[in-house]
Length: 77
Image 1 (cartoon, rainbow, N blue to C red):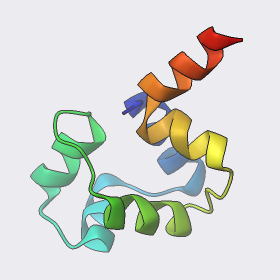
Image 2 (cartoon, helix red, strand yellow):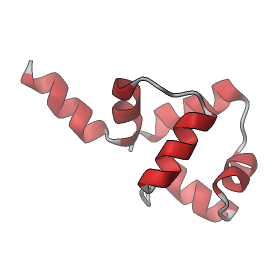
Image 3 (cartoon, one colour):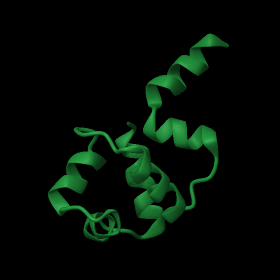
């Protein structure tokens, strides 16, 4: 999880953590823990976040939610 990239997307969209938590249907504390990478998002949450923030590029999705895979991909070349 790349917390910084997700936080940037939230700022770009003008979305605060409370609104983010409400959209995911979770407590503010839970949203904060997930945004900061201390607990993973499940696949349904990732799909919802991507739809909500208009993140459609598969590379960008991997870079945000699976950065270790993104790093491996970049190191293979």
